[in-house]
Length: 87
Image 1 (cartoon, rainbow, N blue to C red):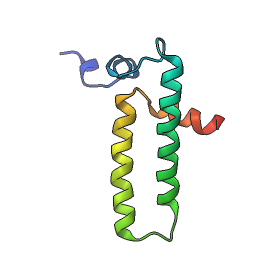
Image 2 (cartoon, rainbow, N blue to C red):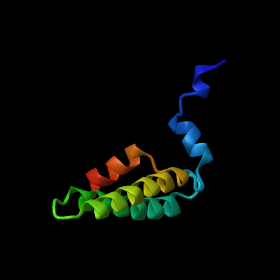
Image 3 (cartoon, rainbow, N blue to C red):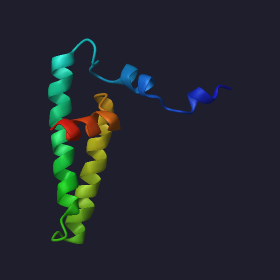
Image 4 (spheres, rainbow, N blue to C red):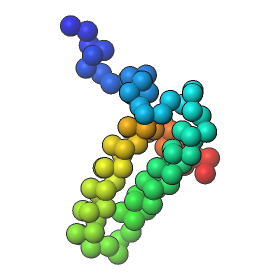
């Protein structure tokens, strides 16, 4: 049994994504920017100390769902961090 079958790689994630960076660059960039901006908003909201526990839990759930959506579109953590750095 190959250990690479158990370790997810960026290449495997890109092959399974809905939009490929190489073929639809402009569309990928537009979608990635929207998803990254939305994620940034959720994270900023969670940092706030003035939100209720219920709101914090709901926002956390939405953030997890958004991260799953980002994976579907091939946006990984490296892409998100790069977005934040060049924003």
